[in-house]
Image 1 (cartoon, rainbow, N blue to C red):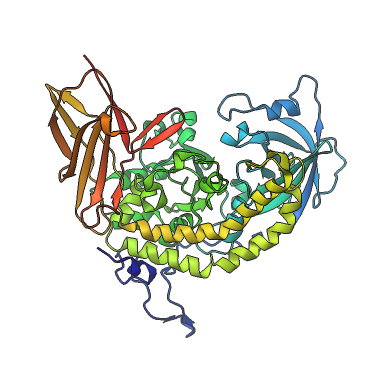
Image 2 (tube, rainbow, N blue to C red):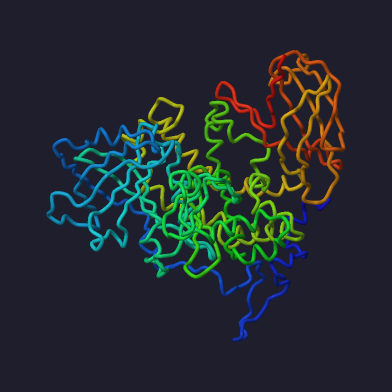
Length: 564
């Protein structure tokens, strides 16, 4: 077993995939000593534009819209009633846009307004997209304003905090953000956060080729599904199904993408070669480490972009949507309201095991030495770019901008706070706002604490064959190479109460179990737990399987049926 203390100091074992990291200060040609770092310079390193973020000030910009009514056209009420982002109903209206830094141009309308977001559309407060009519007269170099309300985030700053921090971290592109106070037809809609649109302007504003391929992950696990099928020109056979998994933001020929997926999935390929061909190690390490530290667990199959430059085989990660990070899943518990959404409560969600189902991340972590390199990356980014003081400085600059707006209507009324009294609601916001630094500290500690746990796995559907219940499951994996055994339980209740247990075997060394049993027709529940044999009571893991009932999630539980 690797001692946890080792995870808090630089590791010495480095994978050939990533190269040897400096163990003492190196020197550039000019003789200037360079500090120890796990991030080894490479010609393929991505470089963002520091100057692009100089206007991402923490002041609140005032944006004013006036709607334009057209005979037979949609209305603002239609826009606000658009609760399904996947249907054909996409009401859009003309508006006149102006802001503190975009003066009145005298036109009756100069932009369009529509609703944006997915699950947030069901909230009382909506998020909006404003698109300027002109391709030349832009707002701060951007044609689209993406105004996010973040209605479920009590702090209302998680997303902006993340991207302001990203803007100072090398090897990963950030997004420019801006606090906005929105008024529509003179009515105050409160505080929003504009987040830069990732598309053509995103590329050109960084002097990158606008014809590069750019994808937004919607339900993408780095493995092939039929929905990703391409025609002979590299275009999706079914664009709608393709974009349900991976939205195409730029680019036309997507054969490089499918080749990358195929090479990752092919276990006969040397992963070192595959990784170095398709990914920049500094970008990948930075994305993985920052995602762990900020606690954005909802990045397994979405909430990131992939950027594939023209004439390159590399795919770079660009972060997206961090309002679910920084302890978001615990904010209801902190209010004493019980378990807010136990979708996040799976045991495997608080460490690298969260990404284990993705072939890219699983194969990366299985390579000797790569776990130690990731640990070094987490420690280095935490020390150099995500220190407590740096985070607190940003939060201190946000507070005088944000607090006055969330303390008044309409935001005060709609804050997801349990308290009814206004001052108590403000106090709830303040407590959540103050908690954000502590969440990063907790995320780093949890990352360390959970490294000894086995990885999650999938359980197969049981088969009842002539009075023998045949059970099987995929093998778990221990990152330290410790031996694993399994506890197997079958019950007639998903709660596995003692009186409902029909089969219970502990210490199973194999990944199967054949058990003579008589089962009446009905529903039964199977649970398999993997245990590290050195510390089985502490280092154990459930399977990926999920049983859902009555809006509750039971992780590590597989339901199966027996017939007549």
